[in-house]
Length: 320
Image 1: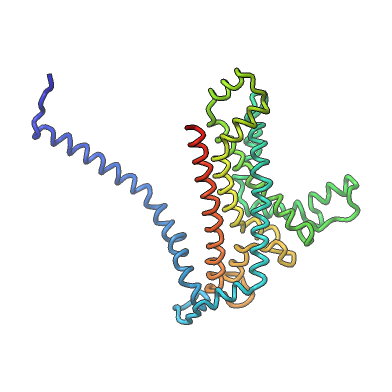
Image 2 (image 1 turned 180 degrees about the vertical axis):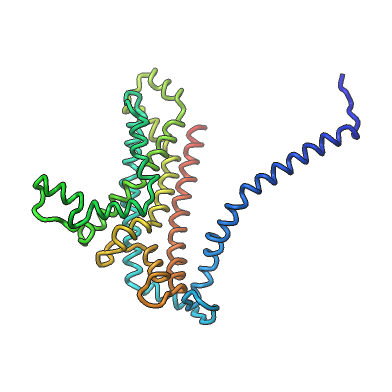
């Protein structure tokens, strides 16, 4: 028999739930507020204002008076140093994605093997560079690859593999390769963690059924593991590409764009004109370069985002 509770008795309980929900939402807002304020002040506001500055000749001081229209954009597009930095940024991104992502997948498959001992040690070892500050890594690498008294040169001289020290970071033939290799090593652990998370989320019962049916390890990898990892791989590809397009602190501390602009990146190019140019700062010009580069990064992100959506659809249709 159902008991009918009068409305007058139900109101306090309703008010208590409403009060509890309101207090919970206020606490959530209180925790989010500091991050939201910092995001508005140091990310959203500078991003919006950079679009405004791009249309002015402005050195960072005083009011915006000298309207330049599209002149900053035109100068950027005609500057060969911008295209040199753009090419280097794309080269760094392509090399990082093409080498690091599949290499991290192979290492993740190895670290997920049941027969391997010391998995926690290896995972920690690969993840250590990720938690190390990039600027510190860049400074340490300057000592490792230094022309004189550098660790690598000392080792090679001791082994008799070279007769004279090599200026690894000062040579136009080796500087970019060294920067790419260090970039791959620096963020390798993060991609490894992404792949491991994807591998360990795969349905175990599917693999058990395939083993019972007599599938070999290679067939499991070829027909189950790799196809099921396509959606995760697409997301890793997107994250890796966008992060690689914004390399700054590593190059700044290792080579500062040299030698002869061989390792110059767009982020470094923008920084040089905005804050550290030999002459007067050109915030407006640097903003125009940043807007143009941001549009390119956005287009690449959209293309890779479509790839992620497409791969997710493939997984859904395959599961159905």
